[in-house]
Structure formats: C-alpha cells, structure tokens
Amino acid sequence: MSKEGLGLDLTLDWETADRITVATLKNYLETLQMQLDRYQEGGWLHPEDVTHSHEMIRAVKFVLRDFGVQDE
Image (spheres, rainbow, N blue to C red):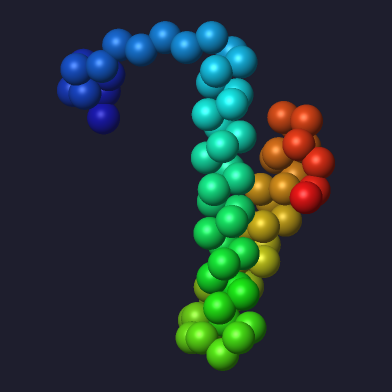
C-alpha cells in the first residue's frame, strides 16, 4: 500500500525508530516463546509451527544483536 493510500506522513528519528523496532521484535519473541511453552505443557501446535517457531526465535535473537540487545 502506498503512503498516499494510508494518508500518513510520519518522520521518526533513528533512536525512536530503533526503539519501536526492538520493542516489536521482543514482543514477537515473547509470543513465539509463549506458544512453545504451552506446547511443551501439552498444548497443541502444528509440527511445522514448532519447527518454525524455533527457527524464528534464533533469527529474531540474531537480529536483536544488531540493535545491541543480548540474549535474555
């Protein structure tokens, strides 16, 4: 969708954009981990989703290091 289609013109400084990106990635990481925790406690998760979640957790942690965030 084009910027014009959204009717949005927004400019952020780099620090703010980075903080938003880090917060979003951390939230995604927490969501993935919660899903895997529920699965390990007996909840249902499609086998492909289990594999994908493990891969995404590694990938998101890798990207977060570029923002100075160490594994927590």
